[in-house]
Length: 275
Image 1 (cartoon, rainbow, N blue to C red):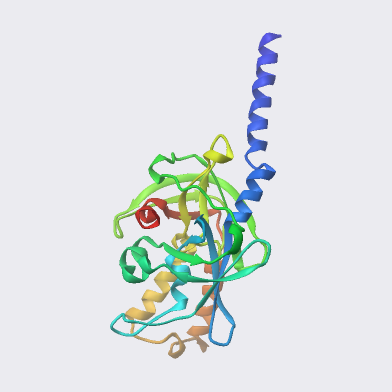
Image 2 (image 1 turned 90 degrees about the vertical axis):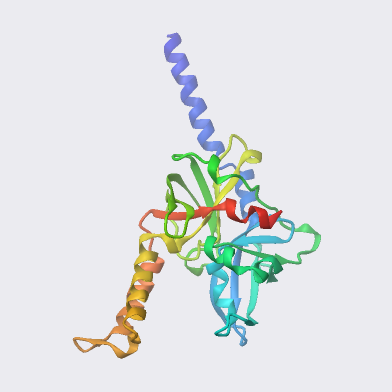
């Protein structure tokens, strides 16, 4: 009988621990910390969007590739123009954001490690921010969660999964991780948070990078093929079908789908710039 009582008590602890992992307090804090990022052209039309999250008052962290559509350089890499960048809070309010001067003055590290820091002047500190942790302290198999704006939708979506495999990209020389979590294009730039024993112990250990997924890599390989051939996709035909049309279809499918395998880059690379 004592054994049965002990097993029942243990089961209650496990169930309670799981239910607490997504308490109302944790969800509210997450939603107030994560933002939608949108880039608009001179006509006010949104040309690109992604996810970001507050790391301290007014400062938002995201992926560099999320911001790239806003940056125009000439052939000498001299900055000519930056389009309007906006962040949107979960309550729908929008604020203009600017790229941190630290990123603009030295973009090489930001590009290599795929991070970017934005600043937005938000009155009365009407947002919360997430605690930055250490990628090295996150074990494989750790429970993780995130929130973001997949596929350009207006609603913020929460996802939960596991940190599957940590590895170092030997080409880029960058720490990354595969994750068992369902995400899509638009989630890039969102936080990967390792669940602690309480909300105060939850820590961001990575940044979602959907471009590293199998679909994203396939897209890069296709683009490299056309570049290597020094031909425009619009000028290539196969069996009477213009290759650019096929390329566009595959681009949309591969970049928007999720196979349940996603990736993140280590949060450690941007910590020295943040603080």
